[in-house]
Image 1: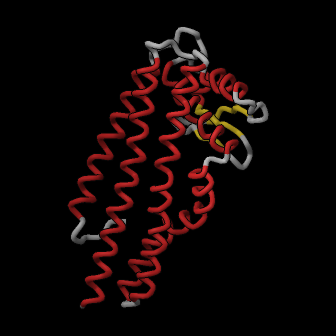
Image 2 (image 1 turned 90 degrees about the horizontal axis):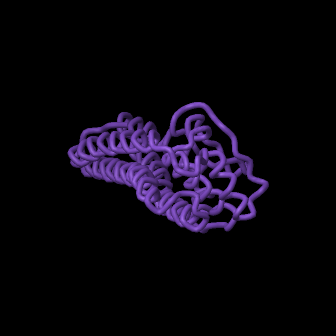
Image 3 (image 1 turned 180 degrees about the vertical axis):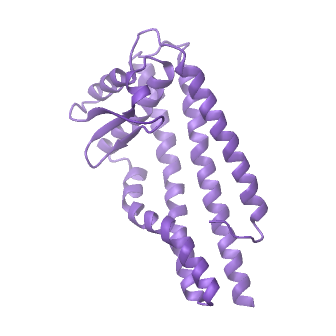
Length: 228
């Protein structure tokens, strides 16, 4: 939720950078979605091969509607791939499937940052949805304690973004490592997969930067209201 303050310029700058990063991701993903991998592996087949190699035979692989809606559900032990990635035998599909498999491996190995992320998720969801509203309402009615509570709740959402970054980077690292070890992609195909995952990683960096910028904005506005 946008408020004018001393960090408005930073928020606008990050917003523009986010648009560029999203465009970069979309173009990179589209480019490698048109390049078939030589083994003819679909995203679903690649995910299954990677999971089985890790002994995660109980994790199901399912298709879901949408584009880039891919995710791993740790509560149900299901790896869900967007329909294009599930059925496509492209380099991009295999890269995305391998990344989500990385999350399944993290879950099975109790990767510390993933554990922390799961623990703070409820607070982050509340903070993301409720924090800005409490902050604004508190300022409007002069209840600075309420505004402070909103700031703290939003800080939980920013913390979630901070913890998410190493989780996503590690999942991509594991993805590329496993693709190389199992030779699911040829050596000259791996750079394409890396480009797709790198572009995706920058979206998480942008999300973290935006959360921090808003947190600074809210803190500066609250500080100014207290002095007044």
